[in-house]
Amino acid sequence: MKRKVFCMSMFELVTAGAMILLYAGSTIAWAQERDRSKIADKYKWNLTDIYSSDEAWRQAKEKFAAEFPRVEKFKGTLGKSAQNLLQCMESLDLLGKEYARLAIYASFASDIDTRDSKYLGMRQEISQVGSAFGASASFVQPEILTIDAAVLESFYIREKKLEIYRHKLSDLLRTKQHTGTEGEEKILADASLVTGAAAGIYSIFTDAEFPYEKITLSDGKTVLIDRIGFNLYRTSDNREDRKKVFDVYFAKINDFRRTFGTQLYEQVKSDMFTMKARKYESSLQSALDGDNIPLDVYRSLIKNVNANLETFHRYLALRKRMLGVAELHYYDLYVPLVSKVNAKFSVDEAEANVLASLTPLGNEYAAVTKKAFSERWVDMYPTEGKRNGAYSQGGLYDVHPYMLMNYNGKYDDMATLAHELGHTMHSYFSTKKQPFTNAGYPIFLAEVASTFNEALLNDYMLKKIKDDDERLAILGNYLDAVKGTLFRQVQFAEFELAIHELAEKGEALTGDKLNALYLEITRKYYGHDKGVCIVDNPIQSEWAVVPHFYRTFYVYQYSTGLIASSALSEKVMAGDKPATERYLNFLSMGGSDYPITLLQNAGVDLTSPEPFQLTMKKVNRAIDEMEKILNKRK
Ligand SMILES: [Zn+2]
View 1 (tube, protein in one colour):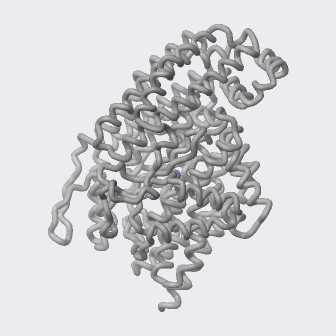
View 2 (tube, rainbow, N blue to C red; view 1 turned 30 degrees about the vertical axis):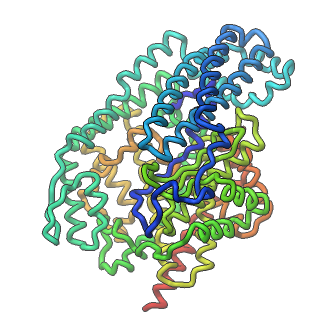
């Protein structure tokens, strides 16, 4: 279970706002200026919106360091009066806001030029101050837990301003029954010394010590098939090569299935320890309770995706057709179906396309988007020493969100711009409408607004682009993403649930048992028995190369995010006015309620088949389009 860092809402903001999308490499698509001083200001961040200078940052930091220890004066008083509680919460908000500002400024300055040790130093300084602040405020959460629910209710009547903290406070009290006595909590905290062992050993074993094999490819080149080599060479155009890559990689993994099996079993047992210590009935319940996600959401996800496997099989049949193979095998799944879109887009073109694609969201959304582009919220180009990838940071409550890009002119870069802009607008509207305490959105919802925008851009570009090759590329990339984000993650989620349930029934998990279970589930998803895609025996040990199984019950959120955004964007693109209103309202709700409630209010019920059906309709439409183009060619 994720423990809530209740008093440190800026940490939630800093982490929830910064959804980092890492794109491998940043190869330069065109001869582009890398010298930061030669790039026009309008494409670079204006950090003076945060502090006027580094000197101003330093002064603010010293002021903060002197002020935060004062929060300790509330220690022992929170349950005594509504006013004490309110004053403490308000002080923490003020401090939290300022801390976020200090930390984000330092990290931005450092991200623009990671080589600059001055900013790295500022980052380290502020992170130390943050730890000390956290320690000062650490009494707040346990002290609130001692307040009786009826007393707290009387506080709301006496002190109306406490209302804005109601959701946070009741969320905290909700976990009370899973919080132990002081002595028990001490033991649980100490237990973290050993409960992470499985994950630690797994990581060292697979990353540093595992004796990966070398193979010789058809071109005579000898390559190491470790994790990186596997990811690279499994995409080979040469079928014999990729078959060999799969066979050799998984055979070697299988040789160590007993060790891998013991590691994973130890992880599952550690989850069971937490579940029992925190008085949950299952590991699943223990993991989902942090965000108050009903178990039904998880089970419905598996059920509904299983009910829609036919759509997945259509995708696999299309892949088979495009590859021109008589029988599709698991090792054929990573060779690119279509090449990437070749067209290049200048930043101005990308901004215009993104802006046009967002038209269904109305005037205010468009106006803020324009502002983001014109008022230097975006640091657009890759420059010497700049951090890789892309992210949006929405944790600056009184300022505005910022986006880091490494724009290279490719279609993917334009899609990333739309994606990060989704995060940015979610932060912008939530910050505008919500008090600081509720402005940050929960991780469970983090990828809804971003993937929603990608869907709108995709749809717009498909209407605009007439070239068949480019259309095939856009559609093919979309389908590959659905395969990876939806079907594959739910297949993992089903396996994860099954192994926890077996262990909770008292069954020991061994490498052989995990192999058999993994093969059975994978064959079901890929339609092995129906001849849709052959899952050869070596694939049975694939579970051993999925590091996410050491982040218990995490991967399902990739799928729920995509399903929610697909369902929402399908309605908005169809011109459904009330659905559009609901979606815009959702963007301004931040973390003011539980994620499932916020989604329900937006019109998405993840326990009903509707969002799955809407998503599948969209997937089928993409397959239809591709088939139409292919038929034309035949
Ligand atoms: Zn994202």
